[in-house]
Structures are given as C-alpha cells and as structure tokens.
Length: 176
Image 1 (cartoon, helix red, strand yellow):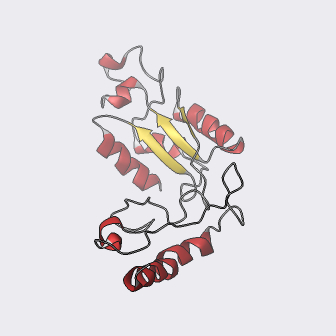
Image 2 (cartoon, rainbow, N blue to C red; image 1 turned 45 degrees about the vertical axis):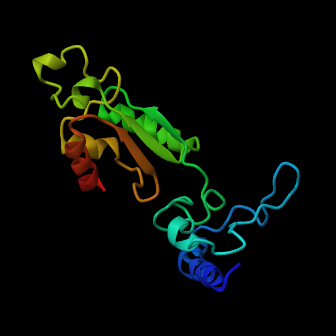
C-alpha cells in the first residue's frame, strides 16, 4: 500500500471509525466466513493506483461508495421494520409499542388512503376509506398521539407517503 493510502486509512480510523466504535462497538470480536476465514474490517488495494482514496473514499465517508456506516453492520445491525398502521392514531400507537416490545428496531408508518392523498378524514371524498389501509392523520395532535411514548431519538422511522409528504414530515419534526 502506498504512503498516501496508509495515511488516509489512519485518518479514517481516527476521525471516522474511532468515534463510531466508541458509541457502537462491533457485535463480535472477530467476523468470519462460513468457512472460518477471518473477514477484515476494511480492504484496500495494494497501491494507490489512480487516487483510490479520492475516487472511492472510505466506509462512512463521502461519496459513500463504500457504505454509509464505517463498520457497516458489524456494530449496528439492520433496522427491522414492519409496515404497520390501522384505524386511529391511538390504535396504531398501541401496535407500534407492541412491535417495539417484540424486538422491532424501527417503525414503518402505513397511512390510510385519505391521508396519502392529502384529504382530511371529514372530507366527503374520504368516506369509507378512513383508517382502512393505514392510520388516519389529520393534525399535529394525531401525529403526537401516534408517536406518544416512543423514543424517536433511538427508534428509526420510515413513512410511505405521497403528495402530503412535506406536511407529514413537518408534523413528525414537531413531534420529535
């Protein structure tokens, strides 16, 4: 490996990898293949041919061609989410709490059809669809109820939504 690539690796280990490991250590001391061959944390070419560090970067660093996490899933496993939401915000909150108690590490919010197209539940066009295929969210109060008692700083959330995405994101930010 070239001197420049060695220096870049050392910088990555100190500035990017180190802080992540201090917050979220790797789950095992050693990672191996099914054949028992140890898997290194990072692989680099034997030389810095063509400015490898500049074009490919390192895990957890821009341009993220080597992944968004410096340790990938050695320290933090995949987020497990179940797409859920039904009826009212209260009913969906109960379901979310149950899922988290059963080991889910994230939530994927299912909104009902009126919410997905930006209609209020009281709109005549919403008749028969409110809360049927997801949770009905009409106001900030509904969003507060939906996430009541759920630690949004540690539970990741995804929301499948269409045109009112900006409004629902603003509500989510207010709740957070």
